[in-house]
Image: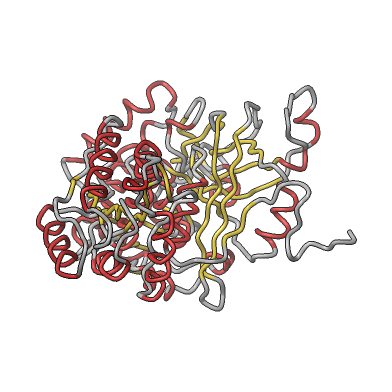
Length: 489
């Protein structure tokens, strides 16, 4: 995956002038040793920050070394003014951690446990949104784990601020929930470039006869293997894939990364002569999500998932409840039927997450567009049941009044045949029924959920929090109550 930042983390130690600087230095060195045992290459800044002149020197050193993710390490109490100046002026995400005591000798005590309190107060004075772990004071080994956990968060925060979302076509009237205001995206640092379907069609037609089309079509054929009864559609899909990639390369401008949010029906099929889902799946597998139905926030949600997990994401409808007949003889383990739903989309999920991926046609579109005869313009979906395993549902969304909010819920795809079509799976989330009512419905979220094929709730939560979003919904465990939940029901 090349559509994401390359991290160069660095660590700067700070020291208050009434504490021995050597203590903070030796503790920093111990952290770096622990980090290196985890296979992480971290730049160890030689400048120790004790005053503002040191802070300026440290920032210069970090810039010259190309550090883009910073660990601010309180090896002792720390100078709250200079250390928070470093956090304020550093151009990138900052993790703030502090050293625990390891010596019973008072001469080896650093009081960073105390110093982090003042540091956090001064960060607030400077309006700096640093990442502070749940337990931010620890031994060298514990801090090394905090740094490892910080890296995917840092990658996401950098990627969001250098992202351009390309959209094609108006946001659809019948899926009005996808038509959220775009100003909050700019507030996050995201750029949006909206284009018409005619722009896309013209770019597609311009690639007719492109010699690269055959090469891409052959690659598609290799990926699909014998599971493709519709090989004749591949040149059209290959031409479309090249269209999107070329458009992004030409139009990224000052941004470094891109994703798409494209209108994909109903005029798409009659004019382009195919369904684009398979291309969407292929690009998602390369870290370049293509959200359906011009869903700008869906595209952003998928991209954040990709940055955090380093794996492809998908966008699924929170589609339907599971018929009781499907559950006969199934072992649901700790889940109840009300914890289950079927996540579905036409065929946009990367092949690596489908049990038996197969090229098919979109059944609903075929009924409307070509009800008689063999499918033609409705071909192009990648279909199959989702593989069983952990998932995280995630969405970042702007409300109608322009306020950002999010939800995160961990669950799993069950090992259960869906007996349906599309990219689809039976997904279990503990206490789903209440989460559905009081977060999804009560929070006015649309039907699209970004799906991570991993339990990624912890880093996603840190990303959303660092982006300044306070309204983060999650599935409350049994025995707790949502604020909107009727206590008498």
